[in-house]
Each structure stands twice: as C-alpha cells, then as structure tokens.
Image (cartoon, rainbow, N blue to C red; front, top):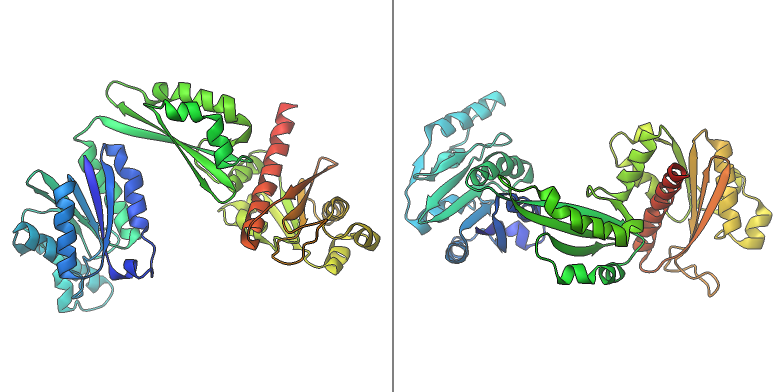
Length: 415
C-alpha cells in the first residue's frame, strides 16, 4: 500500500520545530507492507489543508495526518477531513467524559473549547491517546484509509505503534526487516566502490548506503512472507559478503553509535576509563556520559586546554612542550602517563590537536590531532589528519578516540 504523510502545523513550515513525526512513521510503516511515497507539510489554513488532503487521497491508499487535533481555533484537521469526505462531525460521549476527568484530576475546570477534542467524523474508529487529551481516529473511506494523530511526538509515537501498526499488520503477512550496518574508518564513496556490484545487482534484500558526519551506514532490507519465509535466510548471503569485504570497518550490526559500542565493551569487561582532553574541550566525556549507566565505566576527565594546565594537572614536561609543541606524539604520551598516575582507571585516553579555524601552520595544519591510549602498561599513539570545520574536527576526533579504544580492546581478545 502507498502512504502519504500530511504533517499539519504552521510551526513546521516556519522551522520552529523539526518534523520528527514523518521520520518516525516512514521508518516503521514498511514493517506492515505500507510504503511512504510522499511527505507533505501544510500550515494551519483550511483551504490549503483541504487541497493537500484531496491531492493525497488521489495518489495514496493511506493518508496519515499529524497535528491539528487540539482545542484551539487553528486546530482544523478533523473538521477539514470531515468536510472533504462528506462526513458529519459527531460527539463521542466517552471521550468527552474522559476529557472532563482529565481536567478534574488536575483540579482544573474544563473550558468549552476542550470539548472540540471529543468530536470526530462519523464512522471513525477511535485511537486512544494515553499521553494527552486529543484522541486520534481512523476512517475507512472509498477504499482509502485516513488516519489522524496528534502532533506532539510523545503522544503520536505510542499511538502509532500501539494502534496503527497492529491495524495494518493483521491484514498482511508480508514484512520488511532491516539491518543497519555501522562503519567507521572508510568514506562513503570508498565503501560503495567495494560493494558496487552488490548494489547494482540487488533484488531482495536491497542495499542502501548513506553517510553522516565521520561515518557511514549500510541499510540492508529484506522483504519476506512471515508465514513461510525467514528474513535471516534471505539476508545471510548478502550480509556475509558485505562482512567479507568491509568487516575491518564494521563496528555494529545493531544500529548503535560507536560511543555505545565502546560503553558496552568496557562494561562487559568490567573496565573503567578516564580522559584528558585538549582540543575537544570535554566533548569526548560528554558523548560517553550521554549514555545512561555510563557511571559504571567512566571515572574522570581532565580538560587540559592550556600548556600550563598540561604541566600542572598531568605533569607534562615543559621541555617537551618547548621542543615538540603541545600538538605532538611526545606531548600526548606524557599526557597519558600523567593521567595514569592521577587515576585508577584501567584504560586512559588523551587528546591534543588543532581544531581551527586558526592556530595551524604548514608543518602542523588545522586538523592535526594526536591520540594517546594507555592500557596494560603500554602507551599507544595515533596521529590524525582531519579536515572540515572546527565542529567537524572535534566530533570526528571523538569518533576516532572511541574507535581507538574499541580496536584496542578487540585486539586483546584476538591475541
């Protein structure tokens, strides 16, 4: 079935909020053999909303709207849908009672305009909203299906997963299953070149590469009949071939970030880690502590941005800084040594570099970064030659740091 997402809200058009609802729905609909062909965004305007709705109904089997179900005058979605398909708006007494109860629990009196949320086009199938006062609804109309959901993602997402997905799943045995292969250390064009023949001859499963800052992802998707086929059997030959060609760059088949892969490795090995950061200014520590439970593995962090702080906090030699500079293999090695003395962590990592846009030289251009890693009485170093904006250099430096830790721990397993 072909679907169109009609996102309603002037705030979307003005860029005040990001349309995460369309992304969420597009990601999950294929699980039920429904495929999103169109995304449309329209403001809170009756005429334009009706025009977009009629266009959507002319080219899609399923039209799903988000937004415009609230109590205010510019919440128009149900009214416009009702008018466009010739259905009367009728009150649902149970919903009205529930809205009254919602306000009573909060010790507030329900205002008259909130009753608007209890009206629906006749013959609607209600979709319960456990997170708010605006229920959704579904209408089967002339071989089309119209679904209306609220705009706030925290309300829309559970309603979609708990009501919309089951509605379509019961009518089809065809499913999609995707594996997201995350890679680091290879660019998108180089990766695609290594598997270009697989992409050109793909049938089922399909292969789709895409990139984000500093890393790339392959989405491998199999279509299968849940009653008679196993997606694992369909996907295995292709996944095995991808692993054969790109295995050295693959860090996850579970669509999780590099930082989380490292967190899980450290946790499973019962190891702790500490950082000393110069050019990244605490960004590496932030990334790790963004993960719930990171206190199990993360001990401490030192932001030694200036030369003086490197000397005072980590014991880096002034002679080393004068002779080799703060961005050097020698300096990062001494940062590691100092960090090992300051903490009881099993593994320590230090970073020093030039993030730009100023500060570079011909010998050490912007993007020159040194990583140092101390583990089991050995110090390993790595030089990076990065490019791009200051934000990109700092971000990609952190990715390299996490990958440095990951590879070090995995090499230990293979010894």
